[in-house]
Length: 113
Length: 115
Image 1 (cartoon, each protein chain N blue to C red):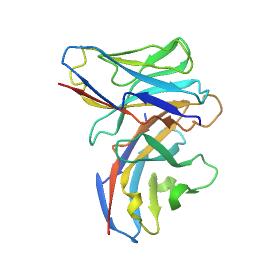
Image 2 (cartoon, rainbow over the protein chains, first blue to last red):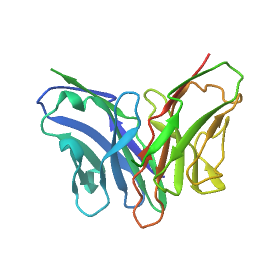
Image 3 (cartoon, chains in turn red, blue):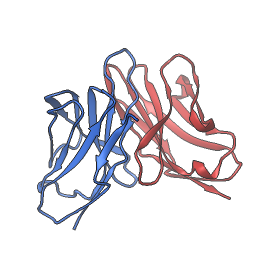
Image 4 (cartoon, chains in turn cyan, orange):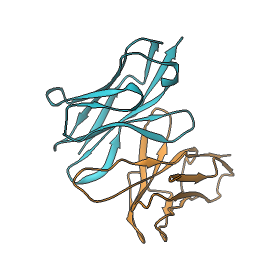
């Protein structure tokens, strides 16, 4: 069985500050990991995904995530927050022959001017 | 442009009525999915389909039904048996095959409110 835990249902940062959204996974097989973003009243869109090619994954809009097997983590970061980054962020895990991801509960990013 | 469309954006129904949510994709994807989203609970899988005329129950299928008569279409019916149907419903699609799980592409969602 696979699972994802996103620490913090809400994260608040000032514009220009570092963004760090935490994701820890549990998987009995090598995982494939995803970060999706959801803007209000919209569907999800892919930010980035880890498929074992490289542990540091760069995505769209300046986001990146690092896969750390020893810590079972895949935290999402961005050096400088922008007001337009305010959204809900979901971490997801799949693998072991299952192509259907298991989603975390989401973290709402709030950006203050 | 290729993508997934869901209609309507907002839907209101009286308690006890069945309602069907539309999902259409022109991405030529084999797999399609329905998720339910409630505040603070993430996405929960209702049904999924890997191929036309075949579909599987997800984690919360009770009170829902689907059909997959065409590759492009995967409508979801919320029946009167669903105890708490008010939620945001998301449809997604993805390619299948390959060794690596594929990215899911999501529609804009339908917000269902049962009065």
